[in-house]
Length: 134
Image (spheres, rainbow, N blue to C red):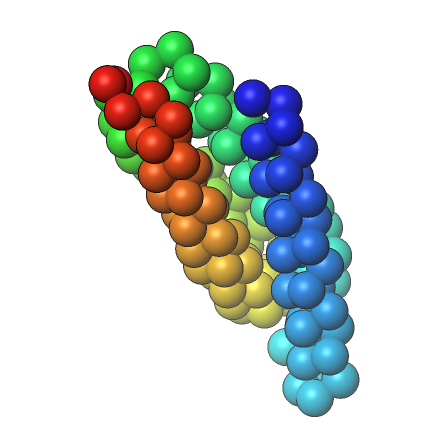
């Protein structure tokens, strides 16, 4: 488990650096009023949440292989509610930065969710190949 988790951590770090570099380059092309000052913190936030959720999913899959999909869907729904709460609180407390923050948050949500789904599906496939009887 630790090897697979370390591999996921490495891939997540590389992914975060690439998306961060793309955001940095895009920041030079668009006016500064469209860039949220919270953007660097959003990268750390999404990195952390993705890492924690993946750790939970790996631990659940070690104990209950058939329940992996149910836990994945439950965690995804919980993340969505948590993220909507954060967006709402931030938008209400920082009205001037609400639109750039929401756009940045949404784009990072899409990228990190796609990354997480792709790697989770790959993890399921390798787990099934290792344990075909489950």
